[in-house]
Image (cartoon, rainbow, N blue to C red; front, side, top):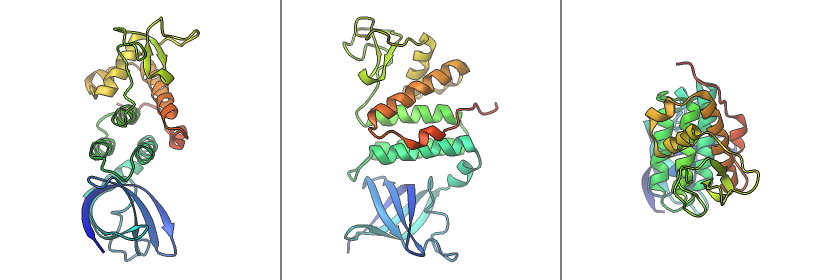
Length: 245
């Protein structure tokens, strides 16, 4: 059967039989792949912890009828241990991999792969607050999937902004003419934070006050839940507490 190599990040795992595990992977060149890791749950497994969630590995696989089979795994990014040490970081990472699982299919998803690996690496290194990292990841992943929000011009008619009325169902901020009656308004500084998170402008994002961060997180969560029809179950467990500076 055809054998291939690829880099992959582990999204989730499921037990199979007494010693095996089904691993869902987001790969660099083959999109999302479901594969079997045989004997991985045995103490003497050659794979060790390289096939746990949040880990990045260089894999050799061969194609099966329904599931591919992993034959080799070399670690490229050991992020799992650092991520699981902090509850806020762990819950943010879970939301990220669930979103990646929902936003990618079997075709190539190089940009989604690179975005997820970068976000998990940033979480593991505690480069930014876990909540900010999650919100930025979700906005950018949704944008790559074709659902880029507008936080400057009106998402409905394109009227030049800034605007402060937000309707996630319409794609972001809207002008006064397009805003339905009762549309909530947010502070201009919160709109600015959302734009910074989408653009990856960390200097501006980290300078935002806690009130803007909390409001932005609610909008990001609503936007993600709207476009992912079944929503993200992990979001309800995400810790939004600020990490000590």
